[in-house]
Image (tube, rainbow, N blue to C red; front, side, top):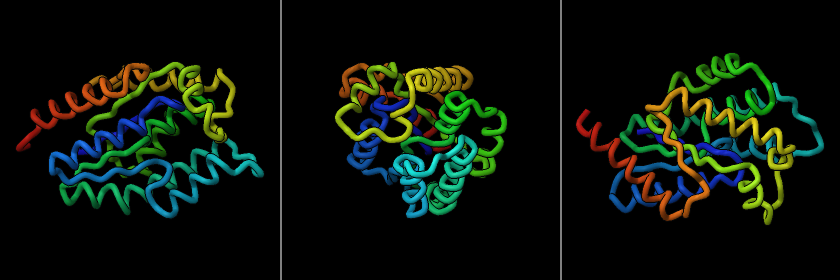
Length: 207
């Protein structure tokens, strides 16, 4: 089972992905938690360039290529081997983030991004994707106490486009995506996520 969490800045997806990981552990199920960009030594280096390197301006195309290089490495070295062993994999961000951020946010052609993502992921798609949806205003307020990275420093219009991109992706694939109001209490969101995951497991057990 491959589960991904998506959302804009400060949406709470990282918190919920960690909570789901711990829930699987408590149930005695084999589970791996990873993230994008990151999850490997190469991915962590790419993360530093994408989020924190301010001396060099990265074009939208450069961002796209770096994200996909990190993703391809994570898929081949971490995610696919884990899935092949029967491990549940949870990923904090995946290919949908690139369509939302570099497509809707930066204005690159989404069909080009989708084709590059298919190559980078070797066709792998999540079984379930949780979208933690919050207004950019609320999300950025949550992040205000930490140092802002390159994406968090973008103008409000950019974050609005990213949010609309996520919603468009979710509505286009309603059987895979599950939209949650990220402004709800954390505990309630955790309960709703587990209910959805448990239902999926019940439906697919033995298949």
